[in-house]
Amino acid sequence: MKPRTDSRQFKTISRRELLKLTPVVLGAFAIPRLQKPLLKAGLGFSDWASARLFRSGHLAPTFADSDLTPFANFPINDYDVDDPGVDFEKWTLTVAGSVQRPGDYTLAQIRALPKVTQNTRHVCVEGWDVIGRFGGVRLSDFLKTIGAAPTARFVTVECADDYYESLDMATAMHPQSLLCYEMYDEPLTREHGAPLRLSIPTKIGYKQAKYLTDLKVSHVLPKVGYWEDQGYSEFYGL
Amino acid sequence: MAIRMIAIEDMKTGEITEAVYEHPLVVRLCHWLNAISLFVMVGSGFQIFRAFPSFGAKIPQKDLLNWPKAFALGGWLGGALQWHLTFMWIYIATGLVYVGYQVFSGNYKQVLFVRRDLPGAWPMVRHYFFFGPKPPVRESYNPLQKHAYTSTIALGVLSVLTGLAVWKPVQFSWLAWMMGGFHWARLWHFLIMWAMLAFVFGHLVMVVLHGWNNFVSMFTGWKKDPEYPSE
Figure 1 (tube, rainbow over the protein chains, first blue to last red):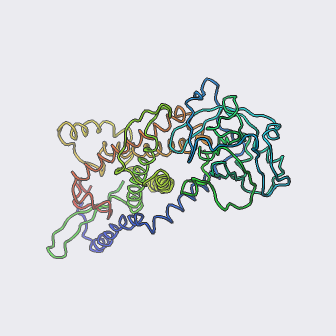
Figure 2 (cartoon, rainbow over the protein chains, first blue to last red; figure 1 turned 30 degrees about the vertical axis):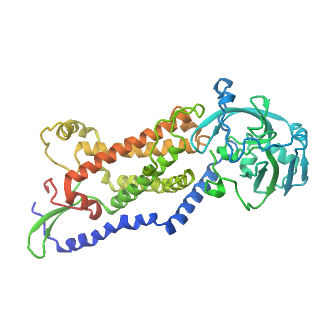
Figure 3 (cartoon, each protein chain N blue to C red; figure 1 turned 120 degrees about the vertical axis):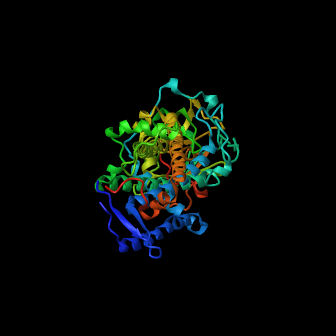
């Protein structure tokens, strides 16, 4: 077959050459002024998708005692100091916000709630993970105790070392989300967040705030968390 | 599949060259979007890896390699995660559009590696790697090319699945379990990236070897002077 000569198609080719500009246009991602909103939108979309993927009834895997990372090999991560010098005698958890019973709660009051112990995975945003044994009370039980407003959307915590974090209400109500006062069947050590920390197996490591001092139930989030406010994912559900 | 062949007449010299329409617009767009997103995913992936360049325990930590910052994208872990979590959606979307288009248009027939391509694969390997004779060119893609393009789609799917298992080891705990656990999922994700880079390397070598007309066809869709006959 002899191909036919087609000058119209030839012109089309020239026009199609314009498509060479496509990668140049896409290379515009590299321009800082365009890059920031793009990455903000991308991270926001990922957080939105993460919240959709979260299932209240889906439990994080739990592990046998033989799978536990030895306590000595459980990393101690802080943003500031290992031991912010909490005075255990005077310590209380100060509850505020959209709750019926605000005020200062002692560790004894918190420990009076049903105890849960679970072996779960702690995943750090850096990429490593350990399996630890965590004991405490369900955050959902505590929220019932303080009479958290059913319409509230967030639980925020503040820490003795000025660290701060927040959780969406669905995650806070998850049956494995703990106000944790024990690790490896022993009271929390100071480096691991004594006297009270969060253990949220459905969230990334930086959400597991230590040395809690304040807990607030709220409808809006003025700030999200220490790392989140520097550009890390706000939801980061596992 | 019918090959669309035209002849191009040079307006000045009157010289006539043949051209064939090889790459539909959707394929070209997906190709370049994918090239960009793959570049970003690999670059930011290396920056993320720098935060914990190991596949073992955190304590004691044994680093696998100290990847140079110059070959990483994002500047810091948080920045790299922003790039990774943004471009993964572009990467997934282009993959879905590409595969969807190929299937529904029937265009996949020119590139999908099937059983009848099997006998032709070895002669191509001999030609490329061991100076064997060049097998006759009958289609746009030779059997080895089809094998490469088909397996890179499989690698793309695996890169997304292993990535999901690392990003969401609780919601997709079954995925992580299928890969041998969280640690293995992270290692697979890493290894699949290297397999992908091996493909990209081979692909670029071939682009250089096959010259300008072939390269331009991924922009215009048309390949001038194709090697294979018009019938």
